[in-house]
Length: 121
Image 1 (cartoon, rainbow, N blue to C red):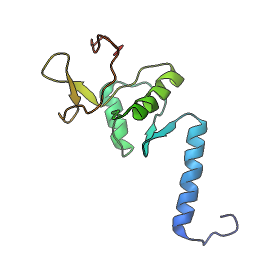
Image 2: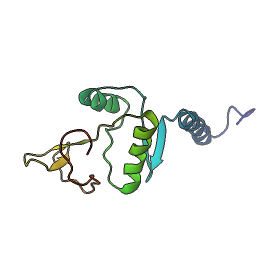
Image 3: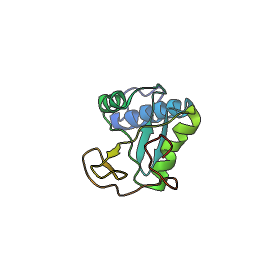
């Protein structure tokens, strides 16, 4: 696109997005799975703050729906050596979880004898 400032606007946007994604990948701020982009700002926050930041960015808090998506979230957990909030909550039935909108989980990958609510699910 160098030297062609008046080229096809779609190609210009694709090129710019590609460059931005490349920079974010180099800085370990995004990863992808199943056509979804998972991103972090690398900062610690509480659950409500995390949900709000995701909305501000035009997305939603991560909710793994497949092993690949689970691995995408785990990528950040390992890289930043921290935990990650997920878009799920405990249901009215103790030990059962659901999506934030109340829908049932379609995927889970708990450790044995989890979830226990002690942070190592």
